[in-house]
Amino acid sequence: MMLEADFKYIIDTFFALFSMVLIIFMVPGFAMLEAGLVRTKNVTSVLTINVMIYAVASIAFLLVGYSIAFGVWENANMSIWAAFLFQMAFVGKTINIMSGGVSERVRIIPLAIFAVIMGGFIYPSVVNISWGADILAETFLDIKMYDLAGSTVIHSTGGWALLAAIIIMGARKGRYVDGRVRVIPASNIPLVTLGAFLLWIGWFGFNGGSVGSISSVENANAVAKTIMNTNTAGLAGAIIAGAVMYFRYKLFDITMILNGALGGLVAITAGPDLYNMYLPILIGAVGGALVVLAVPLFDKLQLDDPVGALSVHLVNGIWGTLAVGIFVESVSFFDQLKGVVIIAFYVFSISFVVLFIINKFVKFRAQDDDQQQGMDVSECGVEAYPEFRRSI
Image (cartoon, rainbow, N blue to C red):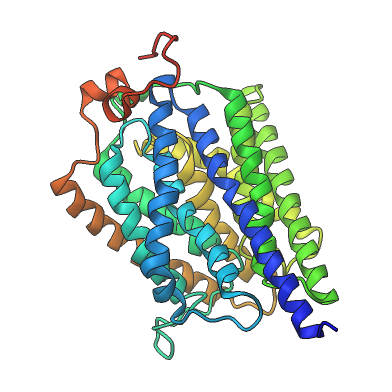
């Protein structure tokens, strides 16, 4: 006869593995989203980068990162291998956020080197001081921030690293001409839509799995509530982004609507288990509006971000984390703000230093001629659409 404890162990192990699979769906999600938003001459490069990120960051987390993040390889509630795989699924997302924002001019080798450092040290150390073993406990820098699935720990971490990379690399050739923004249209809207919805589906494992257990009635309800609130925020983000775009331009921009949905999903990620069924509408709506407002702001600052990753992940990672302190009485707004500031300073500064050093030896930015002919030719030797005339 199976003991109740054994049954719970098995169910929670399966739940972690199932959630991990959903999160891994975000790998092709990022790949398709980015491939659709860049020009056809850069699609193979974008896809290659997404595959390499998943591979090298995950191996770095296996060999070094998990131990830095959590200290020991043990888990009493489920198989340690399931617990590891669930945490491993998160790692590449921080660099996926970064890779999309530097696409169409980034070279693969230096980015892969940074992915190893991010997956093996930078991201695990952020996890350590927030979710994990906590080397800064009992100090002023001890982070008591509530962040269920990583509005700050994952999304803002990737956003701050991206900001450092954009500052070091600069904009794509021809993006800003005489102080004006030159529009570079997306190459494949169906791929963008597919990628966004793969990310949306993956988010159910991302947030739902972060509850940690589903083997009791209470936990099952918490998981279902978390997934429902996650979905609601995405819906609200899409609606508001579409409404704001139509109000401003009398047009429905599907790329902005989808990014609005993703902004809402990022914003809800910090506390979907804590909200009632109505607050996610507000949090997601603000997230969608922030995306629409932030995209032109970053362009004014000439921070070239082809996929809007800064607007979606950095801005809404901050908003979502602070929103928990605003709307949940049991959570201190000061603790949320303190966590945002500490992680922002740490990730941006260390990422900038690491990127700067790597860039001294292996340049991140492709030369103008390589950008002109396309990164597919110069970096991969395989064009995604060889029968098409490449766009300039």
